[in-house]
Length: 95
Image (tube, rainbow, N blue to C red):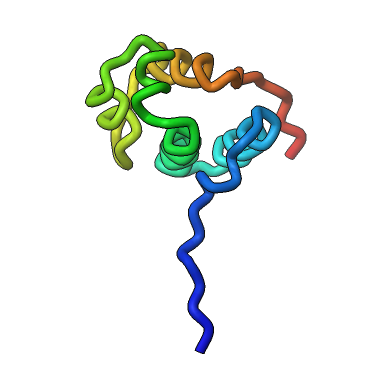
């Protein structure tokens, strides 16, 4: 019987383009926890301590902000995304 390692998205988030696509896909989901999970995956890929430092946040604050069900402040998320080298943008919905 074959054994497989559990999938971890953080293993594949190694450049800004991939990170931007991953976060954009998460934003398309109506569940806000999907977005928080995506940002948390990217934070783990980059290193939580380093991201907290780059974003000007405490490490505990970063963990708390990215916990499923959390309601982080908009400015906190902007700091995190900026520190990750990603920016949010809006486009018209053609549905």
